[in-house]
Image (cartoon, rainbow over all chains, first blue to last red):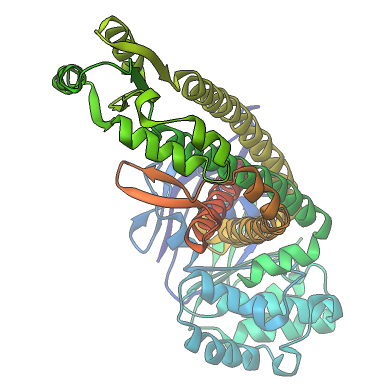
Length: 225
Length: 298
């Protein structure tokens, strides 16, 4: 379970990236985090990964306060989280298999299990035939599928996707969303987006942020620009 | 280790620069270590020769000589004393000049002086012993190798101190150059490091390929330096052999217990040399890569 309690993030010049934001996300929920550019969506995702910490307020993941300055289990926390970025962030000198396997290597999975797990995940993202292919030979949609595979493999139970379809055409966008749909009720998925078509079609919980403030939190919600 | 090989393949010039600086350092180190060992071996050899010989007048009574010997032994400064009587001296003379009958004819045992060959416990005691002997009755001449030993000691100390300064400068330069090269490599992988950190990789996991690459380079440079040094050494082996003709072996002892033969060349000494150089290469390359990655990977 994820809990944001009165979270504020201020910068030295006085601007607030987040202002007194509170919400809770249950395990295996599917959430859209929506809002215009600069609203604070990425700040929330970065806080969940403890890339930045709030100025005030507290953040809990599975009853552990990760916003505390004394929190030192950052590596273990991040091994529970999978990231999907708009620009994919795939390692260019490793093939598809190695890019996905690295997620398991980092968490210390034995080598004999890695091959099996990667194969299962490649099936999920429909990339079995491209296992030994290098990123330079893949399309944008395929690169994003590799990123999703890397994010969901193993014990990573929270998937944070920051504009995962921002660089994709509409057809590929829906292919990617189908993969996220397959993971529904198995992992906690938080997708930051301003793609109204996707949000309105899927009818999932929507948390809307504007100028750092939470302006709406609706079950089966929609979104308008 | 695979990551290290990928890194070498992707940045060949930086890797070659790493190899070159390590090779140069280790090659100079192996020369320095060998030279110092050889010099210490030579010093040890000279120290085992009779350090001081006192010649008595031909008419000196044996009892007087024994009295001097006993006084020296009881001083606590002497390790051992060997008495060379007139007949002993004549035998030595005969042995030395067996190819020259004319010289043998001219000399009899009566005209050769009896002597004492003295081995002091420390080279620094020799002056005191010589002074004592000069005042003793019946003493004709005191000869000692103080000058040779002193020169050798001074030379060894100068070389040791100079090489220490040179060694420290060499280490400093090598580590700085290695840090600069590794910094460059780390900077090239900045994005990759960021991704790995977001995936929860530990600092050790991220640093591992850089450290392994540096260690690998250290070993390769140590092997190359040792092979080239051995080539040069074996080439000059006959020359060194003729230069120190008459010396059967040179030994160096470590911590007063572990003794290694430096000359003639033996596999144990050369193996130890390679081991020291490899360890040295691994240590400096690891230190440099750890310091270089420390800045970017916290």
